[in-house]
Amino acid sequence: MAKRKLKLRKSGNGKSWREWFSWAKRSQTRSSRAEQKEQLGRRIKIAALSIFLPLLPAGLVAGFFYLEKYVHTQQTVEPKYGSLVFVDAPSWAHSEAMKKKLADAAGDGPFELKEGTAKTVAERLAKLPWLYAVQVRTTGQNVLVYAKYRQPQAIIKSSKGQIYYAGLLDSKDPLAGQDNTVIVLEHIEVEKPPMPEITGFADKNVPSPGKLWLASDVSAALRLLAALKEMDDKICPQKPLREEIAAIDAGNYGGRKSASAPHIILNLKDGTQVLWGAECGRAREVLEAPEMEKLTLLYTFYQEHKYTLLGLVKVIELRQPQMGIPRPQ
Image (cartoon, rainbow, N blue to C red; front, side, top):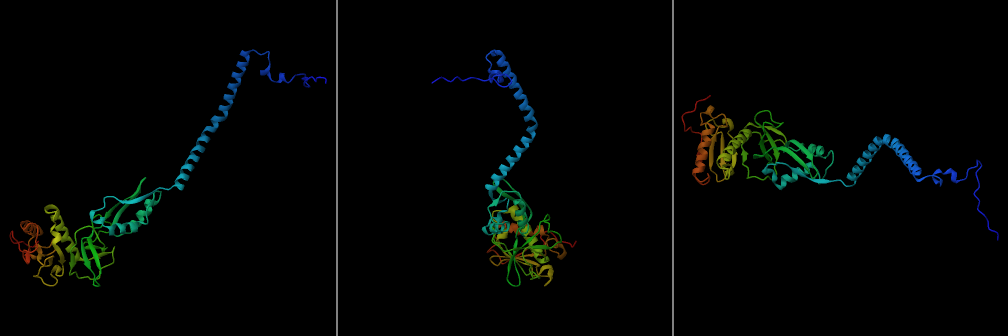
């Protein structure tokens, strides 16, 4: 068989296929080929930069957009939850009943740590009569609650036998205003010694919890309790005298039943009567010993008998002045 010869034909313009690729010409020197490669590389870099630089800002924006979208997607897929934490809550509010009351008002937990949770919890808790000045913020772990608390100070019973707490309002409380105003609170278990009951008050129509009550006799009894608490905190915080008081009788408040009988009486747990007399601030009007003298006499007697008033006498009289005759002012 005759051998076929492969011939490279010339193109129509007289050039062979090798001549269309200058870098493949054998006649080129190595230095010239290297120079051409270097020039080509520079041209490619310049072209790439001219295209890339104008697109850089747009690329960064797009990158941040997709990064934010990715983070948001991850948060949506895997939300974080935390518990409710009441910061600096008073010791009396640490009972299980009070914790449940606060938790029920805030809503079912755990709480999702996201935008809007703090506002929602704050709005719910602000409706609770026990709290005011409520502020809430979320952290990476919990929902923190900062608030002021309306403290129960005594027990009161309505004409129908319903049991409530009564308390005085702090001067910074938004509900504070008119004198002799009392806040009525729901009766639930709290972490503190048993509170005395206020008896003999005139208005038996006790308002519902969370309402204000204009009751001068109840307010007078509560202010007397506040004065006793101040003395307890200074003199005998470990064994407060108030723990021995079963009830405060305000039945003769202002002498409405008898001008000569004591206006307010402290009934102790063993039946002993402490004849306090006129409400705080009005002792001189009825020629009684001033409040400071009454407190000094009472707490001196209390200390002398090893911090108790029980089982000693039937009546403790505090109305008679020991330091001169008081004059009306």
